[in-house]
Amino acid sequence: MVRKIKKRVGGGVAASFAVPLAMAVAALAGPRREGRDVLRAFSPAWQLRDFFLDHFDVEMVTTNRPLALDEYLKWPGAADPLWALRAAGDHGAVLTKAPGSGPDDSTIGLGIVPLVARIAAAERDRLASLWDAEFPEVARASLAGIFEGAFGLISGYDRVVFCGPRPARDLNGVIAHLSALVADECLLGGVPLPRSFPSGPDRLLAAIPGMVKV
Image 1 (tube, rainbow, N blue to C red):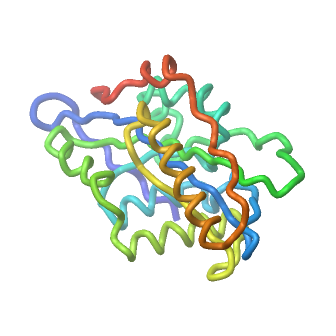
Image 2: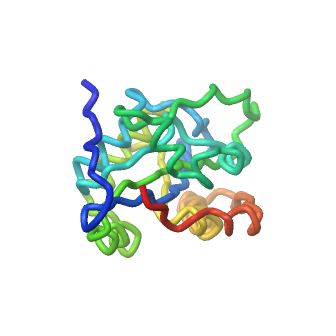
């Protein structure tokens, strides 16, 4: 069942804002820490919207699947979060085209999960707490289960590694953090360290707004 996002009235103390955020995710299969496809769609498409409502009472819009870095840099919702709110409609997910065929090897891939939070002015400090500390264990386990289901991973055997959300303009910091987490997992598994994930152009990321009034 689709849970409709509440519409808040703009103006005065009830004014709301759209805040572009981003997460990064990678999938590591088995003891050899091989890569798996991280661009698969969530089912249902609004699964992450429901996750943030249930665990944090925050209204989020996202895409129906993680995006490759080059896809994210072209995604209209990053630079224009109001477009993302309109495109998502009541169900809270922006539908995207299926990704092109990825590499046919075990390279560890990077997935970017775009998020746009819709918050009241008074909630801005509470939203920042999402990235000031680690998720509570129950929320982390729930989110890991969502990613495992989407990517076809085996819980307890495969590993999903993710970080964020953080402001979208800090995407390169999110990617660098994910690279470090993946390297730690490979060290623990005694397998060769992968290359660090590529970063985005600073010029494009700097143009992403921190917050836009709805």
